Amino acid sequence: MRKAFRIALIALFAWVAHPEEAFGGDIAIIAKETGSTAAEEQGSSREAGQRALLDSLSAAADSLARTADSLKALVDSLYPTESAEVKAPSEETDAQKAADEEEGKSFWEAIFGLGLTMNRGNSRQSSLVSDLEVSRTGEKTRFIHQTTVTKTSSEDEEDVSKGSFNSKYELSQTKRFFYFTSLDLDYNRLAGIDFRVAPGLGVGISAVASSRCRLNFNFGANSVTQYLRDRPNSTNGHYLGSQDLRITLSSRTRLDQSLTYKPRFDKTEDYLLDLSVSLTSNLTSSFDLKVNLESSYNSRPPRRDPPIRRQDWMFYTAIAYSIW
Image (cartoon, rainbow, N blue to C red; front, side):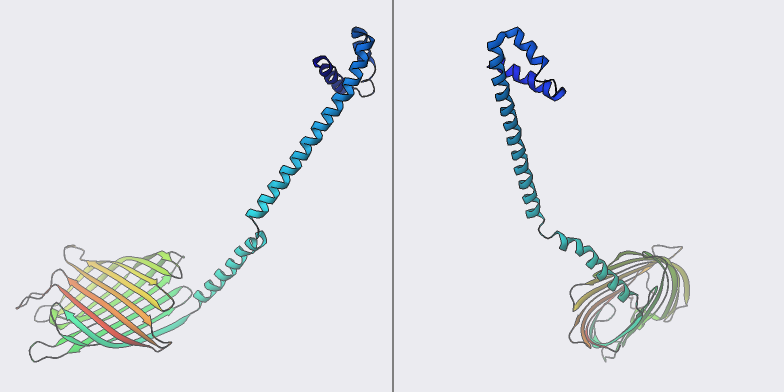
């Protein structure tokens, strides 16, 4: 059998190289060497070897075809909705374009609130508080104004009279970078501040800007002029650093937080620090429920007898009405 298999291989190679001579001279030479009986055996073995080789190749081809069909079926099962997946990016792009167009529109918003506040620090009285927020958002500009005023009188304690008026204007240069100007006005009679004026300017960085979260950092400088009770007025230059955060918790609720730090140029240990955290929930299309916490810290309060506390807290709950 080995000799027959060897003869079949020689015949196959000869047929591939010279088909017209494969069954001629080469086989005749082999027949001379092995005799007439061997030639007959070799002829039959050659035909059997060719048939076996063809059968093997055919079986291998069938096996490869079945393997290809199996791979195709596997791919189809893993990606059954290829056409839908291809359309998804275009649909997402259209939605993003619509959101960008809506964001680029200019609109005004004004909300007025009235509620009850608890004061801690230089006063521990409860009083009514009024709150006004006005904002305008344009394609490249944003204006924000917030006013908070509270006043009450008591026979046992000195009257509580304090308020703040904070305005800010932003001009965007790129998606992440903007300039801003600000004007902060406030007064707190029990803290010895008849009136304080702090205009400022600087640059801002939008660290996060999405439909659900916005985080900005502001850096600049401002001049702080204080009109004090029973003390000379003072004007000093201050650095200005602030952070603003807004998170949309749901379609009806949002969280706003801001922190402002103002150290003096020449004495950084003398600084002003303001914190505000508010939670707003839509009750109806026009009315909101607002819960707010505000803190004001002065590292060097005016000297007075009795001593003035450095920190004042104000916590209030208000019902707000959307004017626009």
